[in-house]
Length: 308
Ligand SMILES: C/C(=C\COP(=O)(O)O)CCC[C@H](C)CCC[C@H](C)CCCC(C)C
Ligand SMILES: Nc1ccn([C@@H]2O[C@H](COP(=O)(O)OP(=O)(O)O)[C@@H](O)[C@H]2O)c(=O)n1
Image (cartoon, rainbow, N blue to C red; front, side, top):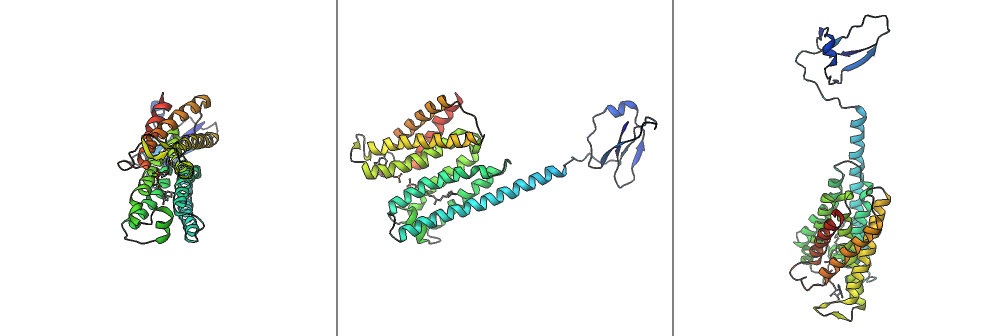
């Protein structure tokens, strides 16, 4: 026979509940113990409960430990990715300072690698609901860094040289700033749970980044409606945007974050890549930076495609 015994250090009030009381739903307080009596004892249910003591939630030690572990994991992951971000920019700064890398190529490689590596790092964060907020700290810190340097409150030749076209700190307040804001948006809104954020960042980082490199190198034949963009650049945007998106979706699918029908997914990503490429080719950069138009139109196209 099992009896429910609940007690607190204060003077317990003893009452022998009628049989019906025992059927009430009991919220087990942390001081509730289940004690089994040997069979010969009378069938008595003893319920001690402190007077006026409201039932306290029963947090198990293992749940608290799991929460603490998750917090520790997310804090460690944030520190690791922050260090990675700083190291990436420092690495390209060194390469440009030593004239081993052109400034324009350095900027584009930082553009391609930063967001993709950030996205690849998301699985090292915990499964806690707070994980996405920890991850967003990384682009947020870089956002503040870009603001401080872009407003020349702080000066850092290396950052400016590796992330701007002409070496003007004010450039940090446009493309690079929009870029990290989009990273924050995708991490917070879509995170690891939706292909929308993954595809949008793949288009902005991979597609748009490669379009610049290939367009500058092979872009002799310009697009009729935009003499600043070329067919080589746009075709590269479509192909690499598509391939990097599929690669990232496979990565997250392999890790079990979402299951996809790959035939449909290939069709959807091809459509999203086409839409993003068309928008990127439009002569609107002066009005709306590519780091805003490309990810936002990719988000819209991906949201519609994957929700149908
Ligand atoms: C150069 C950048 C954008 C400019 O784009 P565009 O105008 O040429 O089209 C990217 C700026 C990146 C920023 C300085 C650093 C961002 C780091 C990122 C949030 C985290 C990377 C972590 C990873 C592990 C390296
Ligand atoms: N579709 C494209 C995109 C860029 N490009 C080349 O890459 C250069 C920079 O492209 P962009 O203005 O999109 O540069 P970001 O705004 O991405 O930094 C252009 O001036 C072109 O020479 C291209 O030829 N075709």
